[in-house]
Amino acid sequence: MIIASSSCDKFLDRPQLTGETDGTAWNSEENVRLYANQFYTNFFVGYGVNFDAQGGAALLSFTNSDDVLTFGNQANVTRAVPNSSIWSYTTVRSVNIMIDRVQKANSSVLSDEAKAHWLGIGRFFRAMRYSELVLQYADVPYYDREIFANELDELYKPRTPRNEIMDAVYDDLVYAYENVRLNDGLRTVNRYIVAGFITRLALYEASWQKYYYNNNERATKFFNLALDAGNFVISSGRYDIVLDYKSLFTSTDLGANGTRDALLYRAYDAAIGVTHSVASYSNLVETRAVGPTTDLIKAYICADGSPYQVSGLTDANKFDLTSLIKTRDSRFEATFYSKPEPLNRASLVYATKFLPRESEKRVKVDGLAPLPQFTSSNNDTDYPVLRYAEVLLNWIEAKAELATIGGEAVTQADIDKTINKIRSRPIHQEAADRGVQPTASLQLSNLPNDPNRDPGVSTLLWEIRRERRMEFTFEHSRLVDLRRWSKIDYLDTDNNLDLLSGGWVNFPTELPGELRPANVGILSVVKLDGTQTTYNGSNASMMMGFYRHTNTGGRLPFLNQINLNPYLQPVGLNQINDYETRGYELKQTEGWY
Image 1 (tube, rainbow, N blue to C red):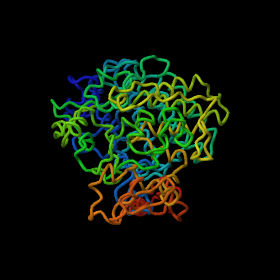
Image 2 (image 1 turned 90 degrees about the horizontal axis):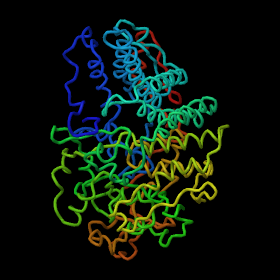
Image 3 (image 1 turned 135 degrees about the vertical axis):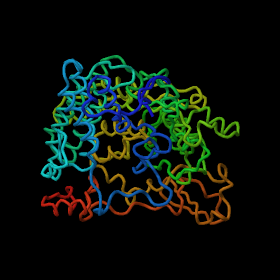
């Protein structure tokens, strides 16, 4: 695994810094760089490496949200305090060591400029890690230096208040933003990348402050930071939306094909044995137990810029895949296979967002087996870790949110350079041949009137949030978004049955082979009005609707439950007891006890 922009001379292929002592590891800038390289794999997961793709990799890691339907019971949020669970500080300790050693470095090793840069890199990674911890637990112990084994008062210190931690994160991000180099080589974090991630981290914290803690003063502080960082990236002119959507996730050389779309990406190279397996899980040969919910499918905007209920397009209210491809935003066609697919047992809609078009054609048109590079862990497609599209959506959301608490109003020019810039991305010729059309621009003077809009969300914010949902499907964002908006209730399957069904299918014409005796009592379909029909062996003509397997089950209750906070993670009883036996106190996460 590497973060790179070419297929040779990829820096994470270099040996780890394991042969140095602490006294010699910091005697050159190159050694500092080697030490910092270890953090790339922690924070920029991409597709993972080999079969190790569950720790934050696209498609495989983000399967618990209102976007994703699971075959069987739906994934639950944490519902009980575990016996053993607590945060990891391995990365924090390593980063603090780096910061300390860089600060102490002799001027003959690091110039003032180099020292400021590497301190910025260290503080950037520290801010990244603490942002992750706070998103999970809120209050956690905060350390800004290396802690030693004999410092029990520090090792067992109380949890630091969230706001105090995030003020330190803010300071770290600002320092990095002001001091990291504009250019430190083709394959390293630079100031633009720092700014891009600031738009994400600051937006997340601002949203938590606004919606969860009702603290608009602190929300304003972080929204403004997101705006400033986004302005820096946007005004640089370095980045643009130039690739069609699917090519962003299926290119074997984003360095050549998409450097303007991606501020940072993770490169893979089979020649040196650096590969992944995510495309193999999308290869139209492997069985999949997760797919899109009906709720997600209905959320895609129509090509005329309207929700399907009020769209003027012919067939906008039809949900067969052929009609959806012709009437919906181009990202729909780029994300899903064009026909109902029994290999997706959950939804019958197969996600191919991460599979190259030529591989799809090879399997489904030519009837051939996938090429070896799209089987097992042989995949060598690159992953855009931080996309310009995300920076644009983070920026416009921050501005729209800030406008509700005293900031400047959003203008049409703001919409044009963000949402409408994304909507105007190129459409692949194959998609155009299937009838895909460009999506109409969003107009502030004529915002869509979505009958399904959450009444607690303004029309503008609803459309911005829809744009995020379409843009980041099966990526990192959705569950984090629901939590920071205080909308975890969107996961409630009791109140939204569209979370328990998948794609629309006409079984008699599209999948007649599934109407067999073995599937009696197993297959069912749900009409637009919510009526559910289960296959009984003699009602084949009625088997048209959104597919639902009769074994599909909802989430267990998680709202308004005693001793359960679905927004934050509890720590384990064993860890609380460990503190107590040593004479210290570890308080449980807020909302848990």
